[in-house]
Amino acid sequence: MGLLELCREAFGAGDLYQVLGVRPEASANEIRRGYHRVSLRVHPDRAEPADKERSTRHFQILGKVYAVLSDEEQRTLYDQQGIVDEESTVLTQDCNWEEYWRLLFKKITVKNIKDFEKKYKHSTEELEDIKAAYEDFKGDMDKIMESVLCVDYTDEPRIRQIIQHAIDSGELPSYKSFVNESKRKINARKRKAEKEAKEAEESREEMGLGEGDDDLKVLIQSRMGSRKKEMEDFVARMEAKYANKSKKGGKKATPQK
Image 1 (tube, rainbow, N blue to C red):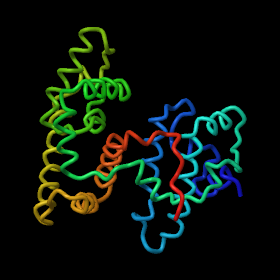
Image 2 (image 1 turned 60 degrees about the horizontal axis):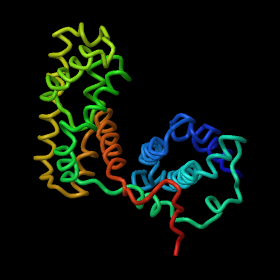
Image 3 (image 1 turned 180 degrees about the horizontal axis):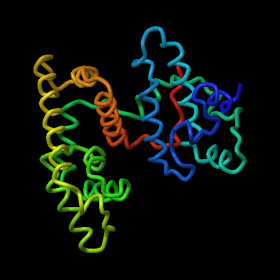
Image 4 (image 1 turned 135 degrees about the vertical axis):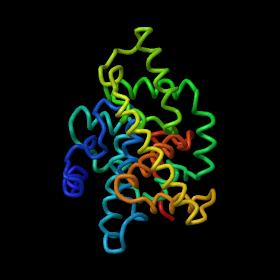
């Protein structure tokens, strides 16, 4: 069975870009982030014992999708003809896809996040992310505050000031959802954020969490429902930013020994 058929069977999508949840015009970095985001959902280490075999298979298929789209020659062939060269080295070599994945994405610790936060806040990168989030979400501050890395409710006045300055200068359009947001909605967002911050701190204290990889994993697992997913997505974005810069998209997977 070819890769496209495997994708259709495993992910319900016969298009490689759809499998990663990215646009056909996506940059190499966007493809990398898409791969990382989806891979976290199917990684064998996160699967229940009964789903381990199925998860491993899906993870392997996903690795092949990324290998094709991160290889310039293979991606060009797919874009132009809609086919995958099943005989290419990218797909025929014997690969350890979990090792390949870990070469691409460095493990993130609580300390990494704190160190990153110090550099990220007030940086040019943060400024651009805030502006992009404002336009992406048409001025919806709920979504903007959820989207921008490392911010909490205490940052909101600063975030609003940055956006308002960009609106006043004509750099950003004026969306009603932003300029006319009610105080009731602002206060509701603050109360929700304060409650979640308190719950997170209580979870850390109850578990005696420290600064290691395992502590971060336990913290994520301690949160349920949508909050757990948000934390996983946050770590996914952090891991993408901390990805080993020397491992470029076209690198081949490491053969099994």
